[in-house]
Amino acid sequence: MLRALTLISLGLLAGCTDGSEDYPRLLPTQQILAEPTLPDHAEPAATSDAPVRNAVEGQGSVTRNAADAIPDPVDNAALSARAADLRRRAEALRNQTTEGDAACPTGSTAPDCPQPAP
Image (cartoon, rainbow, N blue to C red; front, side):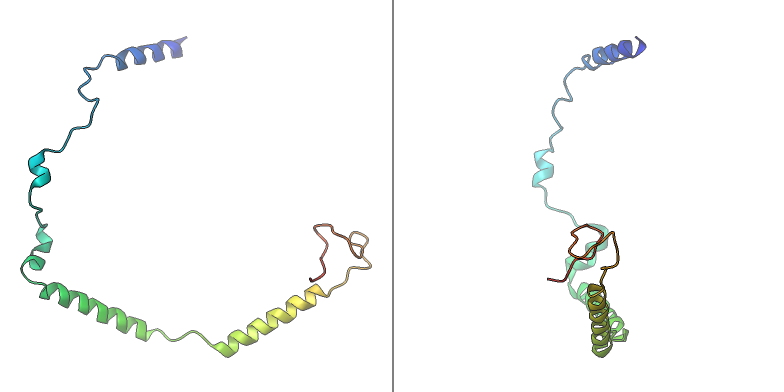
């Protein structure tokens, strides 16, 4: 009962508005058509692009030097040996037989039983 009374009261209060907030406030035309202003930190770029260019090139050289300092982790011989070992182990698992297992007789399609390679 108390819940219903609360909902009815809130419904009545919601209907007691003047309707002035039915639409969003619009942006004044003078503000829309005004020339854009630059923030304070962008003042050097407004007069010359040299400081910005120097900062970008400096950061680029720092990034390039950091990337050059990272050793090349790719060892193709080690990766090839690892891939061959994984293929050998996968083939050995595929070739395991379960003929003595009563739960997985030969040719079984049970989800837990190993399936022959295609």
